[in-house]
Image (cartoon, rainbow, N blue to C red; front, side):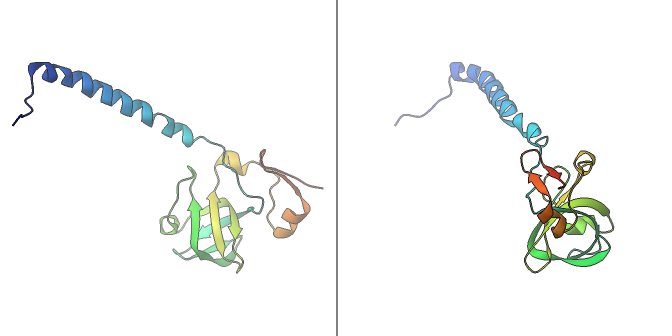
Length: 142
């Protein structure tokens, strides 16, 4: 029966293989940092408001109490999902969508650059009357 025995030649190749593996891992992880800088695209139905998180299931939206929908999501400044419990006590500017029952479904916490984009509708009536350019992420009043 033959057995694999490490030869001096195969031992000499180990540092080169380790270096090649390290280089491959480094280059495959490089694009990850670029993802965080991608321009976020909000849906046409997204409205803007100020959200104050009061509990993991409740908040105030523009000063009025509102509940989170089951399965709702909160996107942080880096577009990663954030748990509502981590935001209790904070008051933030956000774009949001509501589900059919009127509960908060999806929330995007805005960076300073995103919140500077004006105008942005704050009511469904404004969103219905204004024109939206999806690629530029801008609204135009009539």
